[in-house]
Image (tube, rainbow, N blue to C red; front, side, top):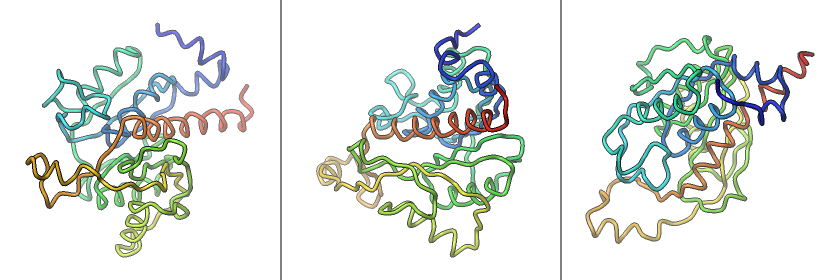
Length: 247
């Protein structure tokens, strides 16, 4: 049996049992989502579904937990599933190697929490629209690229996120497509926005498509985004347990 002594010492037995009973669905296990998944399982979450369609690429190694020289070409969810089960063999880990989009059919009411770490704007918008109408509590990550200062990372409600291109584009897309958000969604973001200083060299070397929108990223920023999302979930579970009078 996995030893959660240090966690129980901090939060108490009842909170630990509550964490272990929660059902969480995480969309995207790349730079942000992979670290979020790891933190959730190490924090006692007993039921975690991870959804991602992508395979590990060499360009992922600088910032994504499942990416090593030995996992290149493997589905990210498969690598993460194995790792998470090694951390806690008793946890229920469901890995869905698929893309979430407008054609997807998923009942969000089966989860206590839904976490959005999707990059695609249209897919992100439809996920937040649908999940926010369910009984699940929803949290979301804004863009973690072109940032290097961890002290600027913050949490704000979706409609109050400022100086974030993805947040702005997401709100615009939601309004233009009449996609209502039916609950307050706390988002992790950073107003920092740096220039890609090495982009021209990468294009000249043939490592990037000149028409692509690839941006530079670093591990400590993507990881803190992911850990912060996990922290929001854990805090919400503990706070709701305390407010319900369970001690």
